[in-house]
Image (tube, rainbow over all chains, first blue to last red; front, side, top):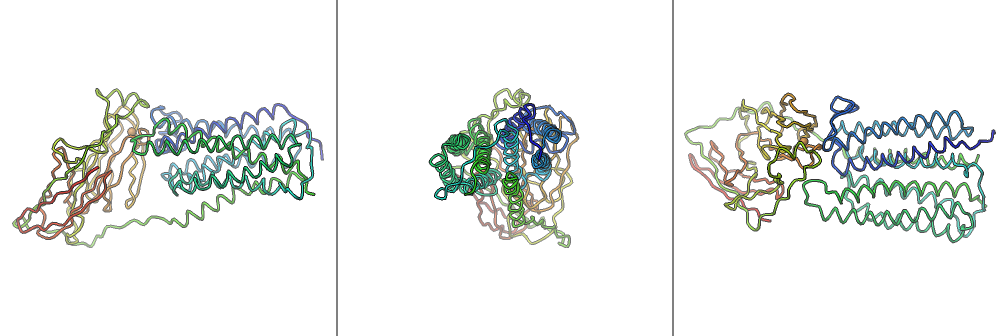
Amino acid sequence: MAVNTYNRGLHRWSLVLAFCTLLLVVAGGMVTSRDAGLSVPDWPLSYGKLMPPMEGGIFYEHGHRMIATTVGMFTIVSLVWIWIVEKRQWMKWLGVAALVAVITQGVLGGLTVLLLLPWWISSSHASLAQLFFSTTVAIALFTSDWWLRGAKTVTEKATAPIRGISLVASICVLCQLALGAAARHKAIGSIYHICGSPIVTSVILWVVLRVLLHYADNRELRLGALTLITITFCQVFLGIAAYMTRIAYADSVQPMPLMVTFTVFHVAVGALTMAASVSLAILVRRNVETA
Amino acid sequence: MRKLTLKRPLALLPLALFLVLLLAACGGGPKTETQPQASLPEAQVDPATAGSVTGKVLFTGTAPVMPVIDMSSNPQCERQHKTPAKAETVIVNSNGTLRNVYVWIKSGLAPAKWPTPTEPAKLDQNGCMYAPRVQGVMEDQAFEILNSDPVNHNVHAECERNAAWNESQPPRAEHKFKKFASEEVLFPVTCSVHPWMRAYVGVSPHPFFFVTGDDGTFVLKGVPPGTYTIEAVHEKYGRKEGKVTVAPSGTASIEFSYGS
Ligand SMILES: [Cu+2]
C-alpha cells in the first residue's frame, strides 16, 4: 500500500467545504424558520428563472438554493481532487459518498417543494443535511496533517470500554436530530425531542467523562472529548432558548426575529454536535485498539 | 486496513434513517379525496314557502389587540400602506360583534345538486394582504385569483379534502382560475413570500353560507322549510353550532357568541 502524503491544498479545500456546508445548514434552517419553503413553488428553476427578485421569503428559499448549488459544485471539486491525490482507496469512496449525499440532498429539497413539504421528505432533507455536514468534517479530518502522521494508539481498558459507546453517542445524536427535524416539520410534537435531550446529553457526558478519566493522556482524544462537551452544553442552552421564545411568540402572525435566531443557531450547533460526536467516534476507533 | 472498519457502520446511518422515515411515511397513508356524487337530484326550492335564517355573531370580553405587521422584508409591500397594516386574525366590530365568521348550514338539507353560480368568487392580493380575508365558494364554482401588487406572490391552497396546490403569481400575471370539488370548511390560503398573508375559504355544496362583515350579522336566504344545524367557524376561535327550524316562509334566528 502506497504511503499517503499530506496535501495542504486538499486539506484546506476540505475545510472550506465543511465551512460552506455549515453555512448551508444555517440557510436551510432559515428557510424553515421563516416559513419560506414554499415561497418559490417551482424547482429546479425559481419563478422560471435562475435569479428571481430576492423579496420576502424568496430571499431565504432562493438564497438557500444558491448556496446549495455552490456546495454541490465544491463537492464535485473535492471528489476530483481526492481521486487525483489520494492513495487511500476508502477515501476515494468517501468522496463518492459525499457527492451522492449532496445530490440526494438537492433532489429531496426539490421534491419537498414540489410535493408541498410532506413532513417525511422535509425531515429526511434536514437529517441528511446533518449527515452530509459530518461527512465533510470527516474528510477534513482524514486529510489533515496530524491524521496522516499516524495515531498514538493506546489499548482499550477492560474496565473502561470506549470503542462501542463512542459510536452509540453518535447514533443517539443522530436520532435526536431526526426527532428535532420531525418536530420542526410538524410530524410529531416537540415533546419527543425535548425528552430526548437529557438522554442524549447523558450519553455524551458518559462518553466524554470516560475519555477524560481513562484516556486523557491521549491528546487527540482529550481534545475531541472537550470539544464535544463544550458544543453540547451550548446546544442545550440554545434548545431551551429556542423553546422559550417559541412559547413567548406562539400567537404571532409572522416569524419573530428572536425566535428565528435561537432556532437557527440551535440547528447549526446541532450539526456541530453531530460532527463532534462523529469525529470523537472516529478518533476513538483510530487511537484505541482492542485489547 | 483498520480504518475501513470504522466507516462501514457510519456509512449505514443514512440508509437506516431513510428506512425508518420511509416506514413511518407509509404508515401515514395517502389522503383520500371524496368524489362529488353526480347522481344527486337537482335541488328544488319552492319560492312560496322558502324562508331564511338570520342572526349575529357576538363577541364578549376584551377584544385582543392586533399587532402591526412588519412588512420590512418586502419594502414594496410596506409602501402600499399609508398607515401600517395590522393583523386581521380577530376583528371585533364597534357593536361588539365578530367579523369574518363563516356561517353555513352544516346539515339538515336533503341531499341535492345545487346550481353552481356562474360568477367566479374572487380573491385579490393587494398591499400584500388578501381580500377578502374569509369567503365562501360553492363546490365547482370558479375561484378567481388576482395579483394587484407589484411583487411576486405564491398562492398555497392548504386544502385537506380537496387537492392542495401551490403556484407562483408574479405581478401583472394572468388571473388564476381554480375550482374546489369537495365540501371543506374552512381551509387557509397562504403566501410564503409574505408569511403574514392568510386567507380562508369555505367550500360548500349548497348556497347557504355567509361571512360576517362590519355589523356581525348574517342572513341565509331562500332556505326550504326544515330543521337545520347552523355552524359558525372562526379562524382563531373555532367552531360553534346550533339548531334552527325554518317554518314555511318563516325566518329563524340564531346567535353565536365567542369570547377571548
Ligand atoms: Cu405574498
